[in-house]
Image (cartoon, rainbow, N blue to C red):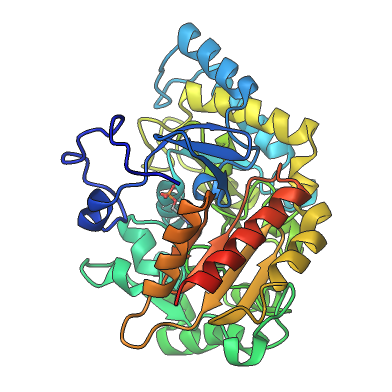
Length: 444
Ligand SMILES: Cc1ncc(COP(=O)(O)O)c(C=O)c1O
């Protein structure tokens, strides 16, 4: 692949890029110019197979006309309207449609929907709802949130406080939080297919933190039912059940961060459905609009919403919201996205592909430096042994080499993560694995 042509190269100086080594990137940029279906095209016209659904968000594949048309229609009908003490029909319509597929099904009653603009906003919203709920039921001392090591919950101050990735935390002050241990155990669970066997006892950390801080100080516990950003960390069998039981015992709300797992990633509409363990609040974003327009949503159990609906009718019950909560254009994109998911059966497609996907990924066992392979739904991770004294550089080099060969993967530390659009074909799965295999053989 030839990256020497600079004719389409913009001036790179001004955009301060997020979560990017700016100087390294600007010295050797990778710029995508268009996208259709499973493929990006870079500015030099090279085709790049999307192994990451953009950033875990383009679940229905790129360039969906139906979403474009819905957005165009909404933009020309009403570009923006506020949702503070005002409303517009499409926000209510989208909330109703989301409620109809809400995590856990109708019995779970997770069908009160608060709109946000991103995953980070969804997380901070859920944390605030949890604390406000506890106060509204006379539990005002409960303001601490329990998260987990290696958790990723976005970049708001709430999200980094409950998150467990040190680089996201060390520079910034935080809200009161504490952390359970993470569940990654390569020593005992390496090359597990699907959920790992070992580690259910790690859920008992919640009991330990209750004993340490007092249940009366804890509002909620938040986990990703499957961690994506830290490099695909799966819950051991029975873990989420145990967490639910301990949270119930101590009056602690359970929050699932489904920003990645929501909208079909695991072969069910939500991880809540996949695991059959229902939390009290669910955060979503990304796949909610197929990544086309920024948006997020928090699903709350009815009892949480109802508990807040007290006091005089003219009193605002929750002092929280965003200018773009329920943005009409995002709602239009979201409704069109849901229609595509439903008509094409995409919320269940990962389950159909899971065995092909699992076998393909695990065929990389034995390749140079591979110390673990993990998979669930249409998510995969290949963990590499780090280079001596230079952690992260090996996987980064694999990422760059894959891109040169026409495949987009994602790296965190020495872990290569994969989460392709749910429209992927078996052939394209084969292409991901063969390209990765070649790159792994090449990189020392
Ligand atoms: C589990 C989880 N929560 C929250 C976020 C933050 O979402 P956003 O980048 O839209 O703020 C992410 C993003 O990857 C995520 O994976």
